[in-house]
Image (cartoon, rainbow, N blue to C red; front, side, top):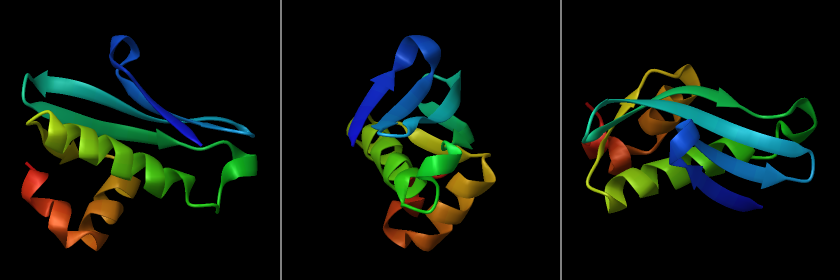
Length: 90
């Protein structure tokens, strides 16, 4: 699986054999990524794609000194399950 950040479209993408999965985000400020929507193609669901994509987005945020606003319910659930990442939440 290949991961990409596409800042011009404000999304993180995972390229799977079944198509692109994505996390769409907004930037309410220069130092915050509001992860507001997660999508995984039906044929790729249940394979851990969304979790790996959230991990990629959260690592990007940490590496670039940004905080995360988890308005997507899936991202919020993932953050709750990963206490080591919760220091990034706003």
